[in-house]
Picture 1 (cartoon, rainbow over the protein chains, first blue to last red):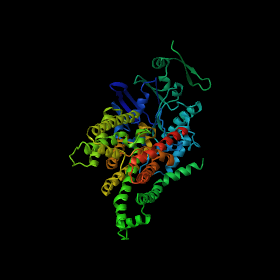
Picture 2 (picture 1 turned 180 degrees about the horizontal axis):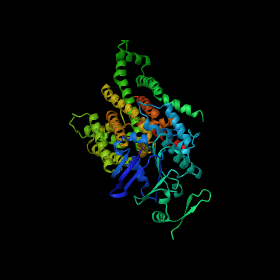
Picture 3 (picture 1 turned 90 degrees about the vertical axis):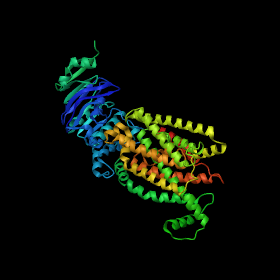
Picture 4 (picture 1 turned 30 degrees about the horizontal axis):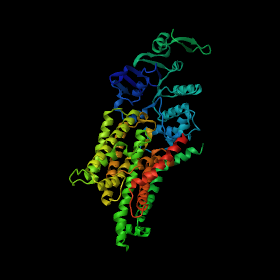
Length: 254
Length: 353
């Protein structure tokens, strides 16, 4: 399943938020989206998820215009975890994860044992088994985030879009979510703030003021010069003596 | 924990059966009660005999006056009350789910304000010169108000996100204020004391004028609402985390919003044009039912429709017998019961946070 965009743009009141983005997401890869606050990561993700129509350019899924797919068919292929999705409803963890089956169900295709299994598996994947009956309001921010991810997994997507999935998570769950995403046999596009976590992606796309500055393997994208330009920080790249991996350390610009 | 999974699964799988079995007997009993109790109490056996005569042609010997009261007056009234209750409760469920606003109710969209203006325009200002009935005037006013509110919300923009839900609430408030002012203007300018009292009575909800003609409108309207809502239960659930989340779950957000809000507006307009604006049903019943059956719409939709129907039949009975020799506006009863119930819901809602 391949997702690609050509000269994609979105503007509001003639103010461009995202412009001229061309990229091909390769099947199976984990593509990291990085960039400073307001660089257009979330807007780009929403367009890729098919919930915000681009105002310029073209977006294709398997060679077909994304806009030509019914919303339901998009949701059977692409799942999206928003940055902050809240509710005041008194739903349980289980209710929230079950929502992920929505695109596969209809009045003529009711809930079945298969859905039951998928929901249980998705809940276990984010280590929330045992929490099924808990009320949403009683969950911590990190637990809510994991439930959202379980809901996305229950959609059984081929492409998973995550907007800063590690926000609110403790370090254990940050790493377990990221390694879960890396292990899943799906294409994933992840907006990330932690650049050391971004290092683990297959490729990175660096956005700056709504434009795609560079796209490539992490070591090519995360250079000291680019970090200085895009994030206004001074960075030193260290090597972890344990395994030889690169580690970024940041300093205030001088 | 192991018990939780089978229990909730049981509920999900059998929800349809469950409601299919419960609804007819409960509704039947409520209708019989509605027909039996009144200023002159009529035995249930007589009510059943009249029903047997009318529906199955059984030919029991029944007092003709009793038969007239039951069939022409009380039963038609109880059936319309049930339809109104179900229709208003469902409109409340739909609007609260789609607009993500706990205070949304069927009158939020300016519908009752427009209906009132239409009603006074016909009865007081004499629009239509006697050729237009009060109901037709009220329906036209309700439809006009809703179209204006929808146009204003559309013009104010906001797409499908959280902002759009806020915009439509604000547009509804603006529309309601405008039409309430028009109503007050017409009443102040042209109505005499007797007319003003009649209008007030109508505005508080009044089932007195209801006959079988109204049933012919009420039943299809409410059946349409029930079927549309049942068809869309999963879409309604998908709005739990907002409309962007619904879209990412495969719901055609725009289409669902137009269909469901349109149906809610249509049903409300039809009900208001028959019986005036009966408050609190659309607001309180859905909230009360969330406490009883939970927030999932597979259960909430049938439960709210049934509870709304029964609640309004009972309220109508109370409105007839509370003050001997006088029928109170039903809106007074629903508000007297509804306001404290709503206060209770607010307080309980806070403690569960």
